[in-house]
Length: 376
Image (cartoon, rainbow, N blue to C red):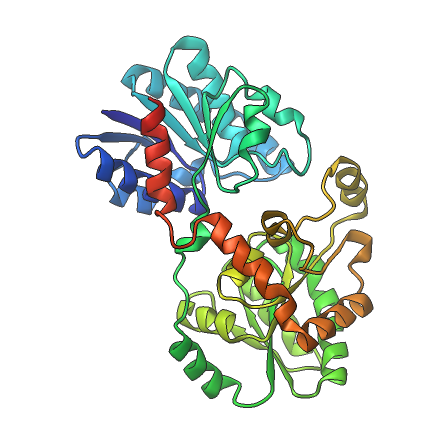
């Protein structure tokens, strides 16, 4: 059996490696080829070129690399067609993946699977229709996504979210770290995002919130696990704050896991980090802002009343969120104090979210592999 699989960034490399491991478990006599990073290569992938050559985000960056990216799209499609696999599995990165899929479908009858459903439930629902004839099957990370794809005639299987398999600190390790670093008082986790643009926009807001919270709760301590791309920005900013903040280096994964598990509350940017917090039962408040123009455009395109994944998966609105024009330090601070005073109000929603995402069930990579093989 032959499987061609592509990924273009670290998260996709992780999904791809878990998927490949699952395929090999179900079908030992399998050959892999495609594009991936070190995790996929460790599972036996022959990568036709380095993954980072297609890991391009943003309109300006894509335009700058347009011709190089277009060549890689054509090269990938040609390689798929020449190798003639039983199935092509493209992981996320829709700007690259769907263009490859379209070329492959135009020149062959190779079955095409796309791993990670587009967020048509949040905005631009027309994207689902554009995948008709280009993708045969979609693998969804969220349980409410399949109906959106099935409505346009595309097979879609919920396979679970990788967050349920991410390592977490044990209760003992979390308590030991907390006793060493925050021996008294409560602990607030600060998570301003992993992209430079969002961190630069949110850090002043977080600073204001931290100073308000410290005035209201002098026993509150603050810890900020920094992402690799934004660590220099964070370390440059926090010494200017009037409240001390402990920064955890990105390579110190044990400290980050311990902080996540032992925190009393978290202030986080919108994104999958809400699922990471739910996985360890840490109550949270979500805050996010963007440029004025982005607010106007995205605000008109959104078709949901919440962007927090815990709210969406649990079908509750238990996680407070302050988005766009509502990303106001005074309001956020008040919301944080409410959560600190009644953290138990979020527990049921977090537990239900993890259950619905596949916790205690079959590994998502194996479920993804089974879903693909069952439909061949």
